[in-house]
Length: 226
Length: 201
Image (tube, rainbow over all chains, first blue to last red; front, side, top):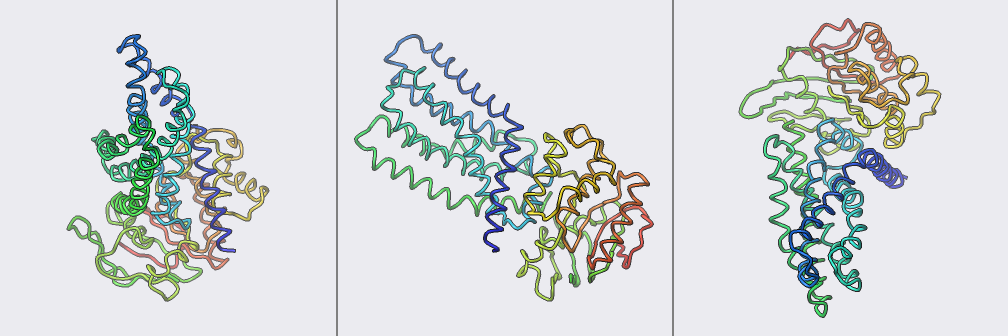
């Protein structure tokens, strides 16, 4: 009975997140527009050489995905923290670590998945062969969840930081270097797909395990000092 | 239900308050009085186990609060000094989210009557951003009815309210205590509400 209640609460947590993200849909849309305009700028600045574009295409997609997903990081906990909803959710029986996990999945669902869906269009623009799409999806699916975990840690660290907004993005970018190396590697070295995806998955599991502890502790400190 | 023993809180090497003793049984209304910055909010947050006390302990139903935390949380409603309603959504959507999130067994007629008494029924389809400060505050109190819990911990519930609403709050407080609930609230002015205990900070 208690477990059913708890599962219901989690479902309605996501209902709340869905409502919130739906009302802030223009933010997500702006992110995607930023992503596509940046791709256009890259294409215009490189020139019309098909070979060059398809050679560096995957690198461009990954860099821009990283940049545009760090743009939305400030929203991760900030709104809920400032209007006191974080505390209300905590008092409703969610430990801070669990809130971190739930929020990470919500960020993945409502911010990263729209990007995932816009990758095929980016592939056409950057002349990446369509048969490589499956590798892109696999690497980005795992990589973006890792980025969400990193984002959760960095934005919970920066809740009390009112001045230096870029610091959060810098933390995410530094730690995302290995993810970029291995995910771009997957597309360029298809014969090593299994080993590379395993490494990527390993990185995800490490960050996923650290995330609730680190974010939970940072949230606790921020609530204490607010 | 709640017993607070010798509580002292220190933050950044500065003493906020020391030696606070408090006991709250069902039917109690306790008021925390004090000037701005005397540590009223800090004490309420310490009772909620958000701020660690430097000395002293808090008990809930005879057990240490920390060991009984989620049972405590399932019996307490906390209303902070700021509005927690989501500004981008309408009043109705906010109420729906609360109703679902707290798994409330409350029917719509009950909420409609509450909204009518709070004079908020005409704003049902308006966004929270269009409401005034006092109105969002009143909407916040709807959570007390939706959550339907025994202990109410309220931070400055009477600020920004007009006289009619303060009168209404008095009535609500008395009703809640008659139903064996208990209330701790902080206030920097003299509210004129009947209280069983007074703590000066």
